Image (cartoon, rainbow, N blue to C red; front, side, top):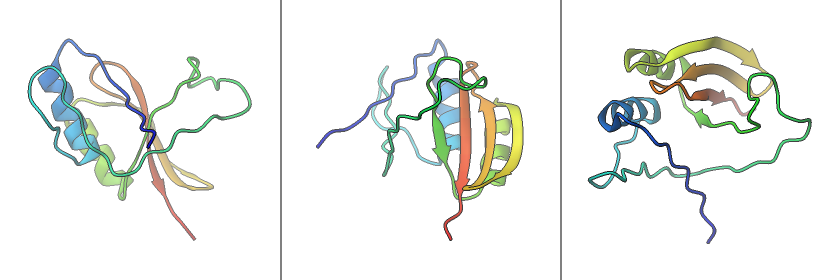
Length: 113
């Protein structure tokens, strides 16, 4: 099985652990300097068209949530800065935030049907 691991480096481990626990709704595992969040399903995609303005590095991390309004409120309460509020998209709803260390993330609420 091929697995993708994404690591986020920080100078303030506890603050970022608290933030991602609130954002992901999952408790971190382990102890010490390596604290993984075990998530059920992940997607790795390559997107045509070049890097968009809001992702100049050409890299994007999205967190898919069941309730984007509740997730956005939790993220804000744990130090996120809202860059783009919730908007309706063809796939559902989307918001863009910065984590407490300044990394840009998307929150997505995908609506099937």
